[in-house]
Image (cartoon, rainbow, N blue to C red; front, top):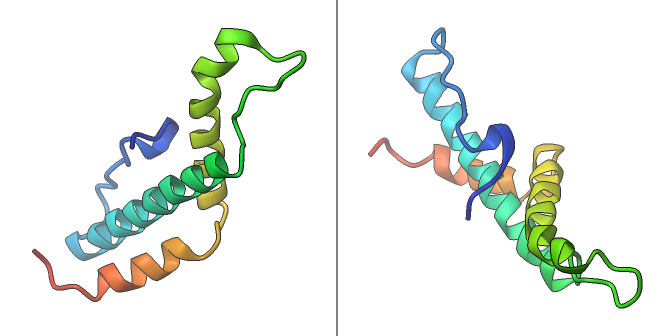
Length: 97
């Protein structure tokens, strides 16, 4: 699932060594995974569903999933529900592939 904004292409920081860059990449991947999970939970909870009265019509239907995904991304990057931290801890213990 594709995310919007800065999370699509995390910038490589030239002053980080390989180990630090690996940890930064793992952290970003964990946050993106949590954001995807949160987006699915928000959709299941009915967020992004068109309203019966005074809804936005076809435009609202088209862009609702993008809004839900962006909101999930912001939630995850603001600390989320702790899933990213658990995933990150598990990933950083794995040997380099």
